[in-house]
Amino acid sequence: MTKGALSGIRVLDLSRILAGPWGAQMLADLGAEVIKVERPGKGDDSRQFGPPFLKDRDGNDTRESTFFISANRGKKSITCDIATPDGQALIRSLAAKCDVLLENYKVGDLKRYGLDYASLNLVNPRLVYCSITGFGQTGPYSPRPGYDSIFQAMGGLMSITGNGDDMPGGGPMKTGPSLADILCGQYAVSAIVAALYHRDAGGEQGGEGQYIDLSLLDSMIAATSHYASQYLVSGEVPVRRGTEGNGGMPSRMFRCADRDIMIVAGNNEQYARLCQVLKHPELATDPRFSEIALRVRNRRALGDVFEPLIVQWQSDELLLALDAAGVPAGPINNLEQVFADPHVQARGMCVEVAHPLSNDAVRMVANPVKMSGTPIESYTRPPMLGEHTEGVLRDLLDMSGAEIDALRARKVI
Picture 1 (cartoon, helix red, strand yellow):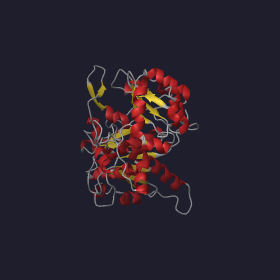
Picture 2: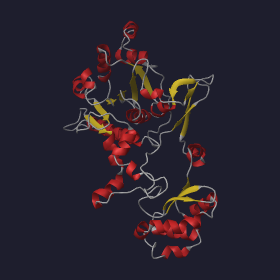
Picture 3: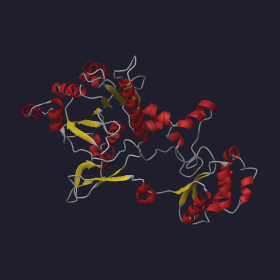
Picture 4: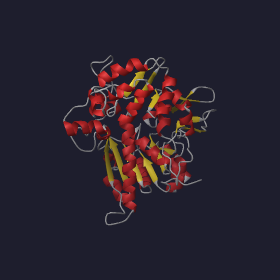
């Protein structure tokens, strides 16, 4: 089996819930050894984020929530009470043998325990230390706690998501998935990999780790992308447009006779082909719609013209015709339909792993990255709470059985 791209990299994951665990899972998928540190008895808060939970062999709920399963595969789980001196000493010993530490405690929390970057840098100068917080390490909001929906609101995403105030159901809307967390986790991965490259590439400043300060709010703002650019360059505040895109038109949901679909005519050529499919080629040269800028300005009139044409079609027939004409379009799938799609299946976007608590394999979303030289060839299930504590302490820290038993007796692990 091919080794992963990050084989040989060891990560100490002190993060909880989603942003940090998501980033650490990506590192694990890419071949890093990830040791997840959890609270004795309770573990990561997300273990309780259910139902639904994984069912055991008798059909009863286990302690393995589907939320936890989504962000923690490929890791080892150890338990450690970092509020105790012995627990703090344990984390310092582990950090000395790791390349990366990932944490998402509130600003200043880990400094109380001597587990902040300045303290651990003395133990391991090569350590790449990534802190994920809601608002960052600086600024007036830095002490505040927060969750994904707060950052979607404050970062502008909700202001540009949902129908406009003049439409039915209009108003700001949160996206379904926790995008602030997920995007911040992805930013963490790229920053960590860059810091590892800098550390190992040599040169005047190479050879040492560094500190990474990541904020969910910053990440959410950055991810507004061309919407933010629209405001920063033009001074125009973007508005909500429901399913409409922000580029070529039409780019929105349309109702067919049987269901809704998405159509995007991203340039003039695709728009002309759409008009041909709908048997109204004259619309390609209509003075209101003949250029992209005109279609953007007249988007409401464009919708009024195309809606009655499209609603006459059965969705499958129209999608086939648009595909043949090279016009981007697709059905609006629920997740059952997503994973039943033959293309999604051909791309291997669902993977299965055995789990000791269940008769059935656990199905998980595959990592979308396809690498030719270091492919992601296999997945391991998310760990049960503290499953690897004894093995990690024994193998990595050379602790004896008696030493491990003593820690357990003192409820450190």
